[in-house]
Length: 257
Image (cartoon, helix red, strand yellow):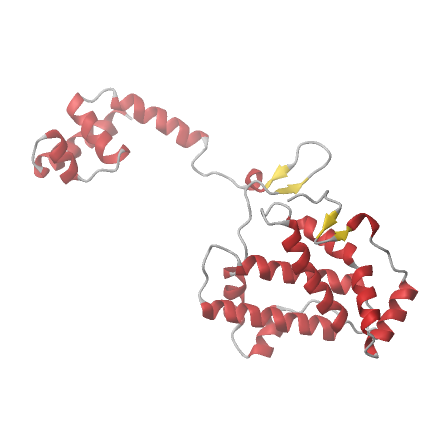
């Protein structure tokens, strides 16, 4: 996603205006009186908020124009619902709404399918969450949302988890001016440790102590994942013989490990 382009959706981002707090308040008062021109000025004057938000999603492979349009929808919703009487800066109120709109868009376009019932619960919970934020000027707890929806909190947690978009293992989570740290750098690999490495070497050395038929049977069964019937057909003996030889080979293998 190229965020260095000057023009996004026909908007010259290098010439976007910055509104002062007094001008913002003046325009909001006019919007409350139904002034559509004031609303357009508020939207245009806060497009930099949308630009700052979509940079958080620059590793999703989405077109910047699409994300910008979706972010503008979130901005317009924030303008229409913002309450001047609340002691909150508009940017503080608008940014979560813009992010929420973009996340909903990404979830709806997510190739991982989630059941309709879970999606309905999750989207309803997000709507109630936005309503409570607007009402109380703070982030509500899951229990508060659950009381509003009259369903167990566990169902809401499950639904919200289900619609989370996948995160790339190569998404940077920290950058100190040097090499970035990616998500994959914070995930441990239980299989890739010294104990398993030594066990693998031990098994390979023990396999060399077996005869050719025993090595073939164990290789086909446990390294290539074939069934005893498939092994029997491949080497031309009965399944019962494969079973007996396999047990004997494993017994010999344990002795050498």
